[in-house]
Length: 212
Image 1 (cartoon, rainbow, N blue to C red):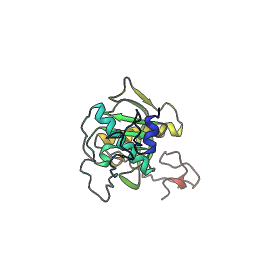
Image 2: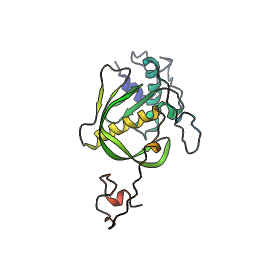
Image 3: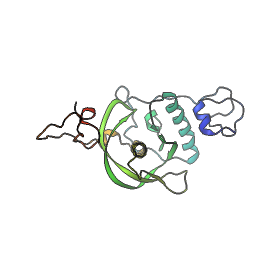
């Protein structure tokens, strides 16, 4: 039996009646979910990008998540996507860093170990923002019994996944990276060398971080 993950990666319904078929309507040859575009907030209006989205049922959430995965897979340039980024008013987001994750009406229960981070967003292309996030978080999601834990180490990919989850949950609450922006202006007695650690705390070399 083909897995739902494989079918989503393939991107269309083959019409052979796969039990895990995620497409609506099912089993129509070459049927694909109607594709939406990620709204570029610099060029187009997105009236719900700053709105707290409505909670949804698990079934509706899974259907929306299917569409979000298909959009993200087709673009190939993102690791997370929230429903309002494509104009859907629903507390649904997806993350795909270490494995595909679906978040339906998610809530952060615990957050610990604040860290600086530099992040971007598909809704605000070609602009990065210095933020403060948490390395370790615990969340709940409607379709899952129990809790999901992210972080727990300083591994770059582990932190990336934790930050991505926080980023997408922010979207569902109507917040963007601009709401998390921190001032990294720093006046030093001595300007750091190009190969010295950047003063902003990112852990990167100055020449690859705040030099410009």
